[in-house]
Each structure stands twice: as C-alpha cells, then as structure tokens.
Image 1 (cartoon, helix red, strand yellow):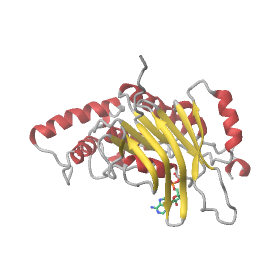
Image 2 (spheres, protein in one colour):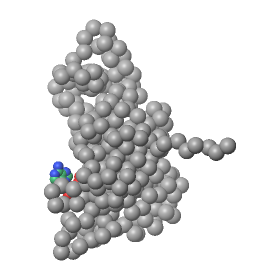
Image 3 (cartoon, protein in one colour):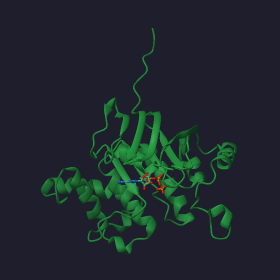
Image 4 (spheres, helix red, strand yellow):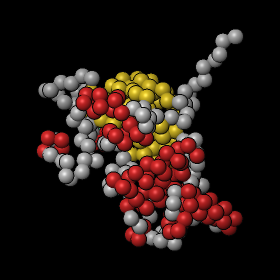
Length: 277
Ligand SMILES: Nc1ncnc2c1ncn2[C@@H]1O[C@H](COP(=O)(O)OP(=O)(O)OP(=O)(O)O)[C@@H](O)[C@H]1O
C-alpha cells in the first residue's frame, strides 16, 4: 500500500512579482508545511516583505501561483493570517486591553472595531488571556505611549494572535529593539509558535536571529544580474536550509557567502565602516 503525500500548506509555484518594469521576485518555487518556522534574510529591497505581503493577501503575484491549502491565496487579509510589523501599529487612543478587543472586533467585520453585549464580554476575556500570554497581564489599562518598545511589540503580537491565525507573519518585528529585549522577545515567539502550533514567516536583517529562531532559513538573492539594468531581474530563494539552535558551522558558512547583508544587530562598539556597508 502506498502512502499518499499530504498537500503542503503553502505552495509557491514559479512566483514572480513586478512593479512596472522593475522585477522584484522571479521563479520562486517552494513548499511550506504546517508548523514550520521560516526565517527570510537577504539584501535590503530584494523582496522579502513583498513575499510576506503576498501571503497576507495585500499583494498579488504577477506570475505563477501562490496556494494556501491547494487554493489561490485570497487577495485580501483573513483571520487565518496575522501580521506584526517593525513599526508599532497599535491604536494610540485605546488602552492595551481595548487595542486587543478592537482587533477581535475588526475580525467580526465591524467597521469601528466595537463589540457589544455578550460578544464584547467574551472578547474581553480572550484578550485578557492573550495579554497574559504575551506578558502584558499587568498593563491592561495602560495606553501605548506608556509602553516601552518591547511592550508595544508584545501588544502587536497579542493583536495578531487574538484572531487565532494559523499563519503568523513577522516583518522585522524586533529590528528597533535593544539586544536584551530582543532575547526576551525570541523566547516569547518560540513559546507562542509551539503553544499555538503556528506556521511562522519572519523577515529579519539579523542572520543570527534567523538561524536561532527558524526551523528553516531562506536567503533571497538575485541569480541573474545585469549591471546596466539593475531592475531587469528579480530575487529568488537561493538557499533553503534546515536550521535551528545547533547550526553554528552552517551559520559561519552562509554568513561568509551572503555578505553584505546589512546587519542592524551590529552593536556600536564593533561597528566599522566595512561591516556597515
Ligand atoms: N507598492 C510598490 N510599488 C512599487 N515598488 C514597490 C512597492 N512595494 C515595494 N516596492 C519595491 O519593491 C522592492 C522590494 O521591496 P521589499 O519591501 O519587499 O524589500 P525587502 O527585501 O523587504 O527590503 P527591506 O529588507 O529593506 O525591508 C523595493 O525596491 C521596493 O521599493
């Protein structure tokens, strides 16, 4: 008896993306299984965020097909996909708790995000629980301007997770945070990934972070390059590697091969004009 292979959760079939005459991505062919933690690295402007936006449904491929569970990804965001950006994207006039309740409200397709009666009561309980999980249980009544950068990102993660997505998209979520805070955020994301059985796609400029957090790392780069027409060709996935917390030798090898990727994690003392170029 032959075992039937189950369908991959995400299938990118020869994906290409152009803006006008500028080719951003080309020939991206990749499958992703449920529960993977993909980290995306590559030079600035090579199309990592664009790939995330295609999964979110706010950009569409100009070539090829992007499938979720075998069907074309809807061209609008859905509650099965949540996203956290580097820039804080919380509502400044709402408390921490209200921010998360509103995220739930928008899922219910309310234009204002307001919920009433029993629905609001249920959402409030779920939001409190989620905020407890991200470590903000003590700050429910605070406003965003009263939160540190790390706390704001915890809030953004709670907003993304309150709608119970299967896929969590993280676009350089910790880029603006201090190294110590980032370490705390890494522990949090790994914990939530396991607990909620998420499939995660995370863009990072920090290769070490990509190696440490991901179960699989993608390097986006151009295979073809025309120096007279820099935008004639797009980037593809040039490395697709199993990674994890034990892959130090592989890290060294890739670090040498894909320089220069701007490394925003370089601290001020070790920064030199060479490694910042
Ligand atoms: N809506 C748009 N219209 C035209 N060009 C766009 C649009 N969105 C992105 N681009 C261009 O597409 C290219 C890829 O952008 P993208 O943000 O995906 O890169 P990235 O790899 O995530 O970069 P970074 O690491 O700097 O965030 C860039 O040159 C960008 O200017």
